[in-house]
Every structure is written in structure tokens, then in C-alpha cells.
Image (tube, rainbow, N blue to C red; front, side, top):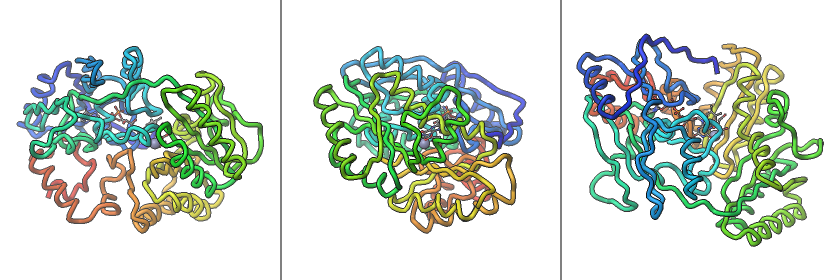
Length: 434
Ligand code: FAD
Ligand code: MLT
Ligand code: ZN
């Protein structure tokens, strides 16, 4: 996003857990700060060395350790690229319970460290549910082997959850064990247009009610997002005839019975069309067409980066209020910027993005703290799935109470007393070092 510049002089690429351990032990004994780095696709500056931190890049730890075809449990090293794991599992007849636009570069260790959400959370749930175990190296170099492969294990505190989503501030994840569902034979994808946000919302409710067990994604984008993609990404075209629709939804179903699943989706679409919830739509006829629909939704982030500067906000909000924020922001900013809204509607996760030709402090002052105050007022989250990183470490109080943040700071101090792990990220600097 051309927002954060790294300024490290040293990048290390450990090949084994033991090497990560030795590096951390050394750095800890000399109070040298480190920044864990996966695929560097994070959107909040979490993997950037702010000053002179040593980068510990996990790209060389990229082996699959084991895969159990009976239980579907995959154990792999943290540096495995998500897309490689998706292909590996596809060959075995299984799927990753996680998919996102950055899959070609992001690593499973980065995904777990950010508790990434993505496109299929509505079906498979979050990584807090799917990750069964991790191996992690603590700041002092100790290796915590929590690489369990059990579905049920209530013996004491479940410590792995501390590391899922802690953005490299409590330890470096070196291995992950993850529960993967079997690949099902029938996948259908519809690209639909809705006249207004209220119809999108009702469509979501109907999809949950009527597609229930087969629903595997419910994503949305507004007309302004689609325009941006069409204008900035090569080879992408609108699958619907040109007409002024205000919103688009992608609904995917995944099931085991081709004719039953298709019939079910078609009946749902017909009903929604007759009820006026959908104003137009098209069902992907093959896998290539389905990929071209996904390219539109997954391409929004890339199109924004090509368009110029971008102010990104990743918010959890009550679905019925969510789009009011986009509209209010448009009124605030007038013609100075393009305000777009898209995201994981099925999970109540809005991506509010403001695109401008270049970064401008006057525009930023119009956006913040307004966007955080608005979110806080509606009891939303200022960080739904991307993490806090550098961008929002000081904004944590908009979503968490003083007492909760204080406890987080105590945990950080206990686990990383010298503050070497990813400083300036996640927690306010004053609290981490007081
Ligand atoms: P990095 O960016 O390298 O690091 C992210 C954070 O994790 C940093 O704080 C880093 O220090 C830490 N970290 C990395 N590896 C480790 C490790 N092994 N141990 C400890 N800490 C570590 N996110 C979503 O949730 N949903 C989406 O749908 C989504 N779509 C995206 C689409 C695009 C096009 C892009 C560019 C990003 C998207 N993201 C999405 C952002 C998302 O957070 C990441 O893509 C991904 O989870 C980060 O993985 P990474 O390997 O690139 O981590
Ligand atoms: C997405 O859902 O497309 C990603 O989280 C990236 C983004 O927010 O732009
Ligand atoms: Zn997202």
C-alpha cells in the first residue's frame, strides 16, 4: 500500500525450529528486537520492521510434516504458502478451511498469527476452531510443543489460542496442525445484483435459512467497488449486462449431491428474484466462469492498490447498520475521494476503503477518529480479521476495555519481558514498555 517502509539491516531465514530457537535466545539475551515475517501480505503493517528490527522470515520452513487421510488432519511448517496447501489437499480429496485473495503469497503461519478470516469463514468457522495445535518458539528461545491433533482436549488452559491472532507479539509459530474438511463434489457459485443494501441483507437472511447446510460463502461488493475492479484489473469483465445495480453478492454453495444442490440453489434464486431481492444474476456454468466471478471479489484489494493511495478499515459491525457508515463517509468526504464498501457480509465484516490519488493528512483527519468512534458507538470491532499491527496498536481502546488491554499487556510482559517480539505492534507502545 506504499504506507510503511521497512528499515532493517538483517533478514534471517531459519530452516528448522531449532534455528528459530537459537536466534530468539541470542536476540533475547542481547535485547535485540525481531519481527516475524510470513508472506508479507498483511494489511496493517504487522510484518514491517519499523526501525532496526531483525526480520525472521519463515519462507524456508515450507514442508508438509504429515497428513492423516482418515481424520483430515494436516501438520505442516509455518512457512507453507496457503495456495500450496490448498493444492496439496485437493490432490488428497480435502480442502483448507481457509481461503483468501492473498493465497498465492501468504503463509499458514501468517494466517494463524493474524487469525485470518477470508471467504469461507461463514461455512468453516475461524482458525480458533480449525487449528488443533501449534508449535511455537517463545521470546527466550524455549520451544512450546502444543502440536496436538486431538479434537477434544480440555486439560488445563488452551494456550494455543493466545498465539492465534497475536500477530507475532508473543512467539514465533513454527508448525501448525489443522483440521481440514473433505472436498465435496458439487460447488455452485452465483453472481447476483441487488438494487439496495436492504435487499442484500434480506438475501443473506434468506440464504442462511434456505441454503443452510450447503452455503459456503456470502460476499458482497458495492457498485463503486466493481467499477474500480473493472477499471484497474486487466481481463476482468462484468458478468451481468451493463445496467445500474447498486450492490452485488456472490453466493457459493458446496455440497455432496450435484442435482439436489443445484436444484436447491436455483429454487432459492427464483424465489429471491420473484420477491424482488435480486434484480439480476448469473450462475457460473463451469469452474473457469466461477474463477472469473471470484476474481472480481478477490481483486478489489489489488484494484485499490493500483488506483493510488488507500485508507483501509476492516470492521465488524451489526449487518443492518454496516452500510450506513459507508454512506456517512461519502457525505463527509464529498468528491475528494472514492469511498467503497465490500466484504464478508455473511460474517458481518465490512471492508470500508477510501481511495485517493495520494495520501493526504487533511483527508485522514476527516476519516479518523470518526470511523473508529462510529464503530465503537455501535459496539463493533475496529479489527475484524486483519489484526491491529502497527496501524491500529494505539486504537485498541475503541474495541477493548481498559481492563482487558491491561491484562493483555501483563501477558505480553510475562511472555516477552524484554519486549523483543514485534515491538510497536498490537498493543499501545506506552503499555507494552511501562
Ligand atoms: P505477514 O503479512 O508476513 O505477517 C502478518 C503478521 O503475522 C505480522 O504481525 C507478522 O509479524 C506475523 N507473523 C507472520 N508469520 C508468523 C509466524 N510464523 N509466527 C508468528 N508471527 C508471524 N486477511 C483476511 O483475514 N481475510 C482476507 O480475506 C484477506 N484477504 C487478503 C487479500 C489480499 C489481496 C491481501 C494482500 C491481504 C489479505 N488479507 C486477508 C490480509 C491477511 O492478514 C493476510 O493476507 C495473511 O493472513 C497474512 O499472512 P502472511 O503470511 O502474509 O503474514
Ligand atoms: C478482502 O476481503 O478482500 C481482504 O480482506 C482484503 C481487503 O480488505 O482489501
Ligand atoms: Zn477480507
